[in-house]
Image 1 (cartoon, rainbow, N blue to C red):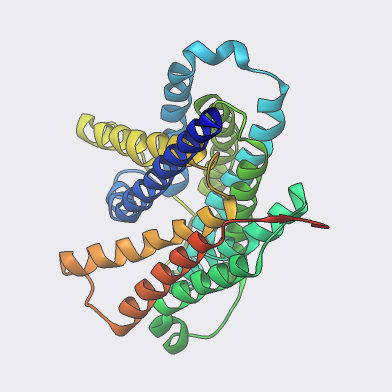
Image 2: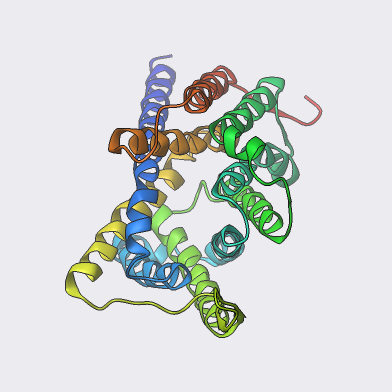
Length: 319
Protein backbone atom coordinates (compact mmCIF):
# COMPACT_ATOMS: atom_id res chain seq x y z
CA UNK A 1 0.00 0.00 0.00
CA UNK A 2 2.85 2.40 0.84
CA UNK A 3 4.55 1.68 -2.49
CA UNK A 4 1.28 2.36 -4.31
CA UNK A 5 0.81 5.66 -2.48
CA UNK A 6 4.37 6.72 -3.22
CA UNK A 7 3.85 5.93 -6.90
CA UNK A 8 0.60 7.90 -6.92
CA UNK A 9 2.26 10.87 -5.18
CA UNK A 10 5.10 10.78 -7.72
CA UNK A 11 2.66 10.81 -10.62
CA UNK A 12 0.71 13.71 -9.09
CA UNK A 13 3.88 15.77 -8.69
CA UNK A 14 4.91 15.05 -12.29
CA UNK A 15 1.46 16.02 -13.52
CA UNK A 16 1.57 19.27 -11.51
CA UNK A 17 5.00 20.07 -12.97
CA UNK A 18 3.65 19.24 -16.43
CA UNK A 19 0.81 21.75 -16.01
CA UNK A 20 3.26 24.38 -14.74
CA UNK A 21 5.38 23.66 -17.82
CA UNK A 22 2.45 23.99 -20.23
CA UNK A 23 1.32 27.30 -18.72
CA UNK A 24 4.93 28.56 -18.90
CA UNK A 25 4.93 27.73 -22.62
CA UNK A 26 1.58 29.53 -23.02
CA UNK A 27 3.09 32.63 -21.39
CA UNK A 28 6.23 32.57 -23.56
CA UNK A 29 4.26 31.92 -26.75
CA UNK A 30 1.91 34.74 -25.75
CA UNK A 31 4.89 37.11 -25.77
CA UNK A 32 6.42 35.49 -28.88
CA UNK A 33 4.32 37.27 -31.60
CA UNK A 34 5.69 40.62 -30.47
CA UNK A 35 9.26 39.29 -30.71
CA UNK A 36 8.55 37.60 -34.06
CA UNK A 37 7.22 40.82 -35.61
CA UNK A 38 10.46 42.51 -34.60
CA UNK A 39 12.51 39.68 -36.13
CA UNK A 40 10.62 40.03 -39.42
CA UNK A 41 12.37 43.38 -39.86
CA UNK A 42 15.67 41.51 -40.27
CA UNK A 43 14.64 38.03 -41.49
CA UNK A 44 12.00 37.02 -44.04
CA UNK A 45 9.36 34.74 -42.40
CA UNK A 46 10.01 31.50 -44.34
CA UNK A 47 13.79 31.85 -44.13
CA UNK A 48 13.50 32.61 -40.40
CA UNK A 49 12.08 29.08 -40.04
CA UNK A 50 15.19 27.77 -41.80
CA UNK A 51 17.51 29.74 -39.50
CA UNK A 52 15.61 28.71 -36.37
CA UNK A 53 15.81 25.00 -37.26
CA UNK A 54 19.55 25.33 -37.99
CA UNK A 55 19.89 26.60 -34.40
CA UNK A 56 17.54 24.00 -32.92
CA UNK A 57 19.06 20.81 -34.38
CA UNK A 58 22.53 21.09 -32.74
CA UNK A 59 20.89 22.35 -29.53
CA UNK A 60 18.69 19.26 -29.32
CA UNK A 61 21.60 16.94 -30.20
CA UNK A 62 23.81 18.45 -27.48
CA UNK A 63 21.00 17.92 -24.94
CA UNK A 64 20.65 14.34 -26.22
CA UNK A 65 24.35 13.46 -25.91
CA UNK A 66 23.76 10.89 -23.14
CA UNK A 67 20.77 9.38 -24.95
CA UNK A 68 22.11 8.93 -28.50
CA UNK A 69 22.33 5.15 -27.97
CA UNK A 70 18.57 5.09 -27.37
CA UNK A 71 17.99 6.24 -30.95
CA UNK A 72 16.02 3.68 -32.96
CA UNK A 73 13.58 3.43 -35.84
CA UNK A 74 10.72 4.79 -33.69
CA UNK A 75 12.31 8.23 -33.74
CA UNK A 76 12.20 8.26 -37.55
CA UNK A 77 8.71 6.76 -37.73
CA UNK A 78 7.26 9.41 -35.40
CA UNK A 79 9.61 12.37 -35.91
CA UNK A 80 9.39 12.48 -39.72
CA UNK A 81 5.58 12.68 -40.04
CA UNK A 82 5.14 15.04 -37.06
CA UNK A 83 7.95 17.24 -38.40
CA UNK A 84 6.28 17.25 -41.82
CA UNK A 85 2.90 18.21 -40.35
CA UNK A 86 4.49 20.99 -38.29
CA UNK A 87 6.60 22.39 -41.13
CA UNK A 88 3.72 22.38 -43.62
CA UNK A 89 1.47 24.05 -41.03
CA UNK A 90 4.07 26.79 -40.43
CA UNK A 91 4.54 27.44 -44.15
CA UNK A 92 0.82 27.34 -45.06
CA UNK A 93 0.04 29.62 -42.12
CA UNK A 94 2.68 32.09 -43.24
CA UNK A 95 1.53 32.12 -46.88
CA UNK A 96 -2.16 32.14 -45.95
CA UNK A 97 -1.72 35.17 -43.71
CA UNK A 98 -0.78 37.22 -46.79
CA UNK A 99 -4.24 36.57 -48.31
CA UNK A 100 -6.52 36.87 -45.28
CA UNK A 101 -7.06 39.06 -42.24
CA UNK A 102 -5.20 38.51 -38.94
CA UNK A 103 -8.56 37.89 -37.22
CA UNK A 104 -9.54 35.08 -39.59
CA UNK A 105 -6.03 33.64 -39.35
CA UNK A 106 -6.14 33.63 -35.53
CA UNK A 107 -9.57 31.98 -35.50
CA UNK A 108 -8.72 29.31 -38.10
CA UNK A 109 -5.40 28.48 -36.41
CA UNK A 110 -7.33 27.49 -33.29
CA UNK A 111 -9.31 24.85 -35.19
CA UNK A 112 -6.66 22.49 -33.78
CA UNK A 113 -8.44 22.54 -30.40
CA UNK A 114 -11.42 20.64 -31.85
CA UNK A 115 -9.47 18.42 -34.26
CA UNK A 116 -7.09 16.96 -31.66
CA UNK A 117 -9.74 14.79 -29.90
CA UNK A 118 -10.85 13.43 -33.29
CA UNK A 119 -7.29 12.57 -34.28
CA UNK A 120 -6.61 10.95 -30.90
CA UNK A 121 -9.59 8.67 -31.54
CA UNK A 122 -8.28 7.95 -35.05
CA UNK A 123 -4.71 7.22 -33.87
CA UNK A 124 -5.20 5.25 -30.64
CA UNK A 125 -8.98 4.69 -30.41
CA UNK A 126 -9.35 6.96 -27.37
CA UNK A 127 -12.91 8.23 -27.34
CA UNK A 128 -13.26 11.86 -26.17
CA UNK A 129 -15.72 12.42 -23.36
CA UNK A 130 -18.62 14.86 -23.50
CA UNK A 131 -16.67 17.28 -21.27
CA UNK A 132 -13.74 17.14 -23.71
CA UNK A 133 -15.94 18.29 -26.57
CA UNK A 134 -17.55 21.03 -24.46
CA UNK A 135 -14.14 22.39 -23.39
CA UNK A 136 -12.86 22.26 -26.99
CA UNK A 137 -15.92 24.10 -28.36
CA UNK A 138 -15.62 26.68 -25.57
CA UNK A 139 -11.98 27.14 -26.55
CA UNK A 140 -13.03 27.75 -30.17
CA UNK A 141 -15.70 30.20 -28.96
CA UNK A 142 -12.96 32.04 -27.07
CA UNK A 143 -10.92 32.37 -30.27
CA UNK A 144 -13.99 33.70 -32.08
CA UNK A 145 -14.80 36.18 -29.31
CA UNK A 146 -11.24 37.54 -29.28
CA UNK A 147 -11.57 38.38 -32.98
CA UNK A 148 -15.34 38.94 -33.17
CA UNK A 149 -15.20 42.58 -34.26
CA UNK A 150 -12.97 41.85 -37.25
CA UNK A 151 -14.66 38.55 -38.11
CA UNK A 152 -18.15 40.04 -38.12
CA UNK A 153 -17.43 43.58 -39.23
CA UNK A 154 -14.67 42.86 -41.78
CA UNK A 155 -14.84 41.58 -45.32
CA UNK A 156 -16.79 38.33 -45.45
CA UNK A 157 -15.07 36.85 -48.50
CA UNK A 158 -13.41 33.51 -47.89
CA UNK A 159 -10.81 32.26 -50.35
CA UNK A 160 -7.33 30.76 -50.69
CA UNK A 161 -5.96 32.54 -47.59
CA UNK A 162 -8.68 31.13 -45.35
CA UNK A 163 -8.26 27.67 -46.87
CA UNK A 164 -4.50 27.68 -46.24
CA UNK A 165 -4.89 28.91 -42.64
CA UNK A 166 -7.64 26.35 -42.02
CA UNK A 167 -5.44 23.52 -43.32
CA UNK A 168 -2.59 24.85 -41.16
CA UNK A 169 -4.84 24.69 -38.08
CA UNK A 170 -5.76 21.13 -39.02
CA UNK A 171 -2.10 20.13 -39.39
CA UNK A 172 -1.19 21.69 -36.03
CA UNK A 173 -3.91 19.48 -34.55
CA UNK A 174 -2.41 16.40 -36.19
CA UNK A 175 1.03 17.29 -34.79
CA UNK A 176 -0.32 17.69 -31.24
CA UNK A 177 -2.36 14.48 -31.42
CA UNK A 178 0.47 12.42 -32.95
CA UNK A 179 2.95 13.68 -30.34
CA UNK A 180 0.52 12.85 -27.54
CA UNK A 181 -0.28 9.43 -28.97
CA UNK A 182 3.13 8.15 -30.05
CA UNK A 183 6.00 10.22 -28.58
CA UNK A 184 5.50 9.60 -24.85
CA UNK A 185 8.25 6.98 -24.64
CA UNK A 186 10.77 8.95 -26.69
CA UNK A 187 13.46 11.22 -25.25
CA UNK A 188 12.08 14.68 -26.07
CA UNK A 189 15.21 16.52 -27.38
CA UNK A 190 16.20 13.55 -29.57
CA UNK A 191 12.68 13.28 -30.99
CA UNK A 192 12.58 17.05 -31.58
CA UNK A 193 15.95 16.92 -33.38
CA UNK A 194 14.40 14.61 -35.99
CA UNK A 195 11.28 16.79 -36.20
CA UNK A 196 13.42 19.92 -36.68
CA UNK A 197 15.54 18.24 -39.38
CA UNK A 198 12.37 17.56 -41.38
CA UNK A 199 11.11 21.10 -40.73
CA UNK A 200 14.44 22.50 -41.93
CA UNK A 201 14.21 20.70 -45.29
CA UNK A 202 10.58 21.71 -45.87
CA UNK A 203 11.17 25.34 -44.79
CA UNK A 204 14.25 25.62 -47.05
CA UNK A 205 12.35 24.30 -50.08
CA UNK A 206 9.44 26.68 -49.53
CA UNK A 207 11.74 29.61 -48.78
CA UNK A 208 13.41 29.18 -52.17
CA UNK A 209 10.08 28.66 -53.95
CA UNK A 210 8.56 31.79 -52.40
CA UNK A 211 11.64 33.77 -53.41
CA UNK A 212 11.28 32.80 -57.09
CA UNK A 213 7.48 32.80 -57.44
CA UNK A 214 6.35 36.28 -58.42
CA UNK A 215 3.10 38.12 -57.75
CA UNK A 216 1.90 41.58 -58.91
CA UNK A 217 3.40 44.29 -56.70
CA UNK A 218 1.87 47.54 -55.50
CA UNK A 219 2.72 49.20 -58.83
CA UNK A 220 1.71 46.19 -60.91
CA UNK A 221 5.27 45.01 -61.51
CA UNK A 222 6.12 41.37 -60.63
CA UNK A 223 7.90 40.88 -57.33
CA UNK A 224 8.83 37.79 -55.26
CA UNK A 225 6.04 36.39 -53.07
CA UNK A 226 8.62 36.65 -50.30
CA UNK A 227 11.91 38.42 -50.86
CA UNK A 228 14.79 36.69 -49.10
CA UNK A 229 15.96 38.86 -46.20
CA UNK A 230 18.71 37.82 -43.77
CA UNK A 231 20.75 40.07 -41.52
CA UNK A 232 24.27 39.09 -40.47
CA UNK A 233 24.64 41.90 -37.95
CA UNK A 234 25.85 40.43 -34.61
CA UNK A 235 23.06 42.03 -32.57
CA UNK A 236 20.36 40.74 -34.95
CA UNK A 237 21.89 37.25 -34.97
CA UNK A 238 22.05 37.25 -31.17
CA UNK A 239 18.37 38.28 -31.06
CA UNK A 240 17.51 35.41 -33.44
CA UNK A 241 19.50 32.83 -31.45
CA UNK A 242 18.11 33.86 -28.04
CA UNK A 243 14.54 33.89 -29.39
CA UNK A 244 15.04 30.44 -30.95
CA UNK A 245 16.49 28.95 -27.75
CA UNK A 246 13.72 30.30 -25.51
CA UNK A 247 10.54 30.34 -27.61
CA UNK A 248 11.41 27.25 -29.67
CA UNK A 249 13.95 24.90 -28.03
CA UNK A 250 12.89 25.45 -24.41
CA UNK A 251 9.16 25.58 -25.15
CA UNK A 252 9.09 22.55 -27.45
CA UNK A 253 11.02 20.41 -24.97
CA UNK A 254 8.74 21.48 -22.10
CA UNK A 255 5.58 20.94 -24.15
CA UNK A 256 6.69 17.52 -25.41
CA UNK A 257 7.67 16.34 -21.92
CA UNK A 258 4.48 17.75 -20.39
CA UNK A 259 2.37 15.80 -22.89
CA UNK A 260 3.64 12.59 -21.30
CA UNK A 261 1.42 13.42 -18.32
CA UNK A 262 -1.33 15.60 -19.84
CA UNK A 263 -3.72 14.37 -22.52
CA UNK A 264 -3.30 15.92 -25.95
CA UNK A 265 -6.91 17.19 -26.02
CA UNK A 266 -6.28 19.17 -22.80
CA UNK A 267 -3.06 20.63 -24.20
CA UNK A 268 -4.97 21.67 -27.33
CA UNK A 269 -7.45 23.58 -25.14
CA UNK A 270 -4.79 25.27 -22.98
CA UNK A 271 -2.38 26.37 -25.74
CA UNK A 272 -4.73 28.86 -27.52
CA UNK A 273 -4.83 30.91 -24.29
CA UNK A 274 -1.52 32.35 -25.50
CA UNK A 275 -3.65 34.55 -27.81
CA UNK A 276 -5.25 36.09 -24.70
CA UNK A 277 -1.78 36.75 -23.26
CA UNK A 278 -0.76 38.44 -26.52
CA UNK A 279 -3.86 40.64 -26.46
CA UNK A 280 -3.32 41.63 -22.82
CA UNK A 281 0.31 42.57 -23.53
CA UNK A 282 -0.82 44.63 -26.55
CA UNK A 283 -3.24 46.51 -24.29
CA UNK A 284 -0.54 47.11 -21.65
CA UNK A 285 1.83 48.38 -24.36
CA UNK A 286 -0.84 50.72 -25.68
CA UNK A 287 -0.94 49.00 -29.07
CA UNK A 288 -4.56 47.87 -28.60
CA UNK A 289 -7.41 49.00 -26.36
CA UNK A 290 -9.32 46.92 -23.83
CA UNK A 291 -12.51 45.73 -25.52
CA UNK A 292 -15.54 43.62 -24.66
CA UNK A 293 -14.25 41.02 -27.14
CA UNK A 294 -10.99 40.67 -25.22
CA UNK A 295 -12.77 40.32 -21.86
CA UNK A 296 -15.30 37.77 -23.19
CA UNK A 297 -12.63 35.86 -25.12
CA UNK A 298 -10.33 35.70 -22.12
CA UNK A 299 -13.15 34.58 -19.84
CA UNK A 300 -14.21 31.81 -22.25
CA UNK A 301 -10.58 30.72 -22.54
CA UNK A 302 -10.36 30.34 -18.77
CA UNK A 303 -13.68 28.44 -18.70
CA UNK A 304 -12.37 26.05 -21.38
CA UNK A 305 -9.21 25.36 -19.36
CA UNK A 306 -11.20 24.80 -16.15
CA UNK A 307 -13.60 22.45 -17.96
CA UNK A 308 -10.70 20.44 -19.37
CA UNK A 309 -9.40 20.04 -15.80
CA UNK A 310 -12.66 18.36 -14.77
CA UNK A 311 -12.32 15.87 -17.60
CA UNK A 312 -10.22 13.26 -15.86
CA UNK A 313 -10.85 10.34 -18.16
CA UNK A 314 -10.73 9.54 -21.82
CA UNK A 315 -12.63 6.36 -22.46
CA UNK A 316 -11.53 3.73 -24.88
CA UNK A 317 -13.88 2.59 -27.58
CA UNK A 318 -16.18 -0.09 -26.25
CA UNK A 319 -15.77 0.82 -22.58
